[in-house]
Image 1: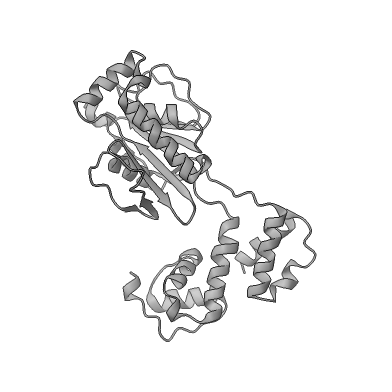
Image 2: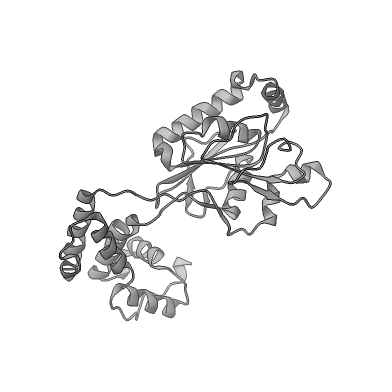
Amino acid sequence: MDKKINFKKIKWGIFTNELKQFNKKNHTKYNISDFAHLILKYPQYFKRITKKRAQFYINVLEHTKLTGGKISIGNLQKFLSNSYSKNPDQNIDDYLLDEALTNDTAKVYHDPKTGHAVITHRGTQGASDWLNNVAYATGMYKYTNRYKQGQKTQKATQDKYGAKNVSTLGHSQGAVLSRHLGKDSKEIINVNPAYVNEKPHQNEYNIKSSSDVVSALKPIHSKDIKIKSESYNPLTEHSYDILERLNPNQMIGQGRKINHTLKQLKEKVKQCILIDPNYKTIFKGCKTKQDILNRIHYIKNI
């Protein structure tokens, strides 16, 4: 889309007006965040004040809102699909493949805009994995190479991105790994999970078909979604493709709110005033964190 944009003859004004004019001229539907990132991607086409406003939005305003965490059903299906692939997609929306951490049994993606990372443990694939299923059923799963490799990748992902910035996903046998290894991550999201009497974690979400055999013994909890079966085929009902029966835009998981200190927020106020001295009046009299957050919210909606 970027290559088709006509950057010429745009009537620039305040940042929100610039966005409106830009969308009208190019027949685009950018939101203010995407617009700010576009400006910094093509700085040669924009005025100095516009670039400063874009940088201000990204560095000051964008990082005081709820970011990362929740995953759409559509993206959840893509993450699970790629976990089985020998040649996974390089990106899923804003998430980029981390090739250094990705391996045959787990795929890791990272969103550089929000700092949110996703690790997906794939389900059963190949004869050796069927032996792993037997090990799971007999209580010996933690001694398998599959478990040890998953443990190593999970730890490396959490060490690199921070445990509370990581969503841990799994399908079928992969859900065993996500449940055992993702308890310290921000959340666990499983589809048709293999289950043998484990107690779900507080941060665990499960989606299952009503007639899936593998997850049949798992009781439904408040964070779980049960999808009505549409066939008598056990393979169909066990597949992660049951997600196609849900709204792809439906979100699952929890958001992540950055908890700024008063000192950090005061630094943001200084940045605001450096970019536009008029903000000095807006922030005048602010003494508490909530005072500053309220004024930043006001600026966002000007």
